[in-house]
Length: 257
Image: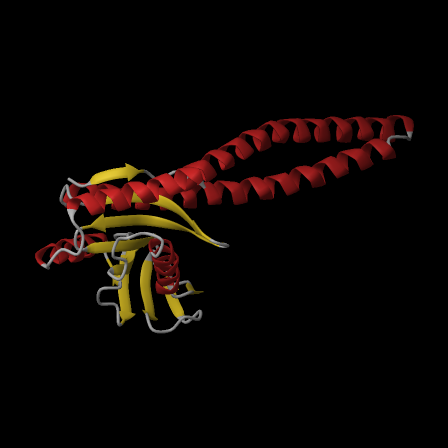
């Protein structure tokens, strides 16, 4: 087993914030709909019984409008919560696989926050090994995924199981940016930094990867583990002591940031 120094927490924090918002919306839902019903009933009684009540009906209508707006927000929050939970599950599954299948001279930092100068990024998984470093960007895309790793614009297409097609940005670009920021940070150390490999992992089991020039760039979780393990047969570029120093140094800079 590898040595894991940090776990996913960014999506967990977002998920907890959405849950807090949903609890607030639930309380507001009861208050708004209850108050709206009360004002509408009172307005109707006054209007038909005493030929008054237009103002109460106006307030009731405004409360209904407000409640409908919060209902729409609640629906969006429920969907975002489901998407966040699914994405978090995919990242945690990849983290567990890396931890279980890589050797104990490999260090893993999940959800690494890295800041160099004015630039910053979140790296889903960073593997530090004697053979080099692997920047892993995990996605949970579902369906048929078509694209070319050499094109940076919105030229990728994701066809969902239901037939809907949506464009997507080439995720290799993000992995390359994360690699660049990491390499800039590594220039401040005495350790080798040239052997840093960007990987995109499509973690959803229903992902049908139809990507051009995907070799060693766009992989399934199992393929990513195999690729990293294959590097173990090459001549090490870092000693075990250097690997640990580098991994713990990255973890410390994150805690200071």
